[in-house]
Length: 296
Ligand SMILES: C[S@@+](CC[C@H](N)C(=O)[O-])C[C@H]1O[C@@H](n2cnc3c(N)ncnc32)[C@H](O)[C@@H]1O
Image (cartoon, rainbow, N blue to C red; front, side):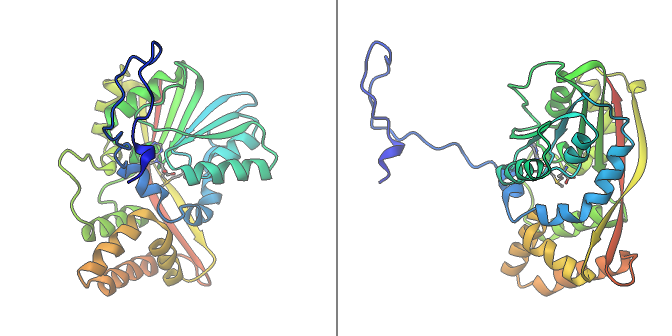
């Protein structure tokens, strides 16, 4: 029996609670956090650096601009933004990715870029109107409670500031949307009430969620853009990276193993990666996403 789970404090004036031997339960596991702390997303992020930098170049950043990178991972967009002189705070739910981001920022001498743990559904203690720009590239879309996520992003953005979201699009035929679709086909169904992250890739949902945060539809614009994943090995080796390090695909393989479907899943992913690869001697796979720009 683990004694640290029991309340030991005596009743005092400062602590008017009757001592008890009832167990203090640890908080329930957060499946959203567990999914992204699983494996090592930095291995996939390594293949996203060029597109991350290119995207940041288009954001019109100026020195001293206050930027929140939400669902920042290990800094694919946060670090390039800091290199352009912005003051960047990265927030991510995964502790291992926050640590990796802080290490990368320190290694690159970027004192203007710090990473901290947090949940896009509840950004407190970040103050109201603290940022000129909130950028979230395939990040906030994965947080549960999308209406709260929209409200929080708007709350921390200055009036006149911007929110830029990159969201994968449901049923899009290109790379990541298909990886997520295939992976979910092998994973047990989510609990009742689960809202698919992919719904952030539907314009009407985005408008409805920001309307709930007081943003008018004509302050929201949409564009289809491309993010390219560049990997130094073959497409099959890139599938192995997803199998070993990318939470959603790791979960799919775990479920497939239990049902004897591992080989079918492996084949389905290899066919996808090979058919979408544009490189002759390595792997370069473009993926279409919905770029959402909101003026607050
Ligand atoms: C696909 S990765 C993208 C990471 C990074 N933006 C990039 O482009 O490399 C999704 C990220 O969202 C983070 N994330 C998922 N749910 C989150 C939440 N509720 N709050 C904050 N971050 C979250 C994950 O930990 C992960 O780092």
